[in-house]
Image (cartoon, rainbow, N blue to C red; front, top):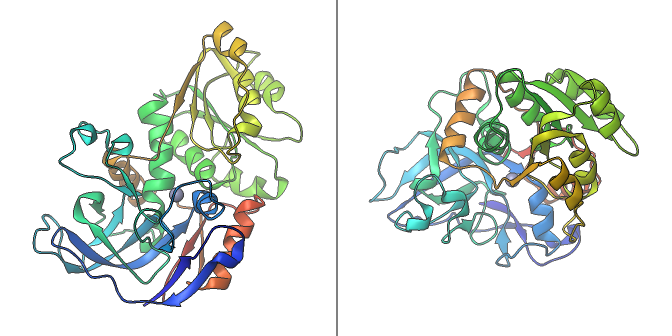
Amino acid sequence: MRAVFLTGLGGYEVLVEKETDVPKISGNEVLIRVRGCGVCYRDTLVRRGFMRARIPVILGHEVSGEIVEVGDNVEGFSKGDLVASLIYSYDPRDKSCAGGRENICRSRISIGEDRDGCYAEYIALPYWVLENIGSPGNAPPESYSIAACVVGTAVRAVKTIGGISRGESVLVTGAGGGVGIHAIQVAKALGARVIAATRSPEKAEAIRKAGADDLIIYREGFSEEVRKLTDGEGVDLVVETVGGPTLEQSLRSAKRGGRIVVIGNVDPKPQGVLLGLIILREIHVHGVLNSTHTELREAIDMIKRGLVKPVIKTIDLSEESVRKSHQDLERGGSIGRYVITPK
Ligand SMILES: [Zn+2]
């Protein structure tokens, strides 16, 4: 099969297309024919050496596809099922994974980093990281590749951790990015008023289409504008998808007693935090790490029902396309998610 490997750490040249064997499955695994594989900003961090990874490895952790082979011990899945995966695996016997905490459990193994991922025609995965999609409805099968890492993370940020209620206000930073544009849709589906912030005027149309009530296109900061739009109060919830570069503005945009959920960090350097703002306004800051089965199921359901329309741009499985998508992600030029669709 064809696959794009991470062959070292560094620039785009370490992404290399190779012919390799179709993975052999163990008793607990299924073999999936990849229909879609999202290209995540995280992949660029792995490539640049900011995350631990086995090398060489096939990158990619955002996958949907059809099961073509089933291991002897697999329960609940059959050949032909259309499935989407969590972005990691874990040991289901590990007690630290129980109770919906599989995303932060000790035995977590990152797909596309610790084991081969989906920049490939086929991927082998243990059955317990999968969810059945059933009939994909009006959404193309490849669009479910972003159910876990993108839509699921947005669901976890806005609903599970963010605890949004109907009528509350939400600010989404990095609104044109992969998680941002879907967080807008999730928040709207849950009845929130959404203010979106972006630095990229060329993403305005897509952000409005995603349902944002107000859009701030900024150069320096956005908190003053957020306060104006909320009668000087600030928002109930900030969904911070950018990280370091916008965190201070996000803290200034939250209302007294407001919440900030931090999902993304484009800048891996340590960040200075204004503790005074957090203390004096009693702001609740909470990290969000991807999604669990609960959010993956909800994301699949929202996509099926058309409440969330995945914003994706499909590319082919080739060294050239993958390198270009990494480049585009790093310069912040992409709208929504690049999804590799092997032919
Ligand atoms: Zn991802």
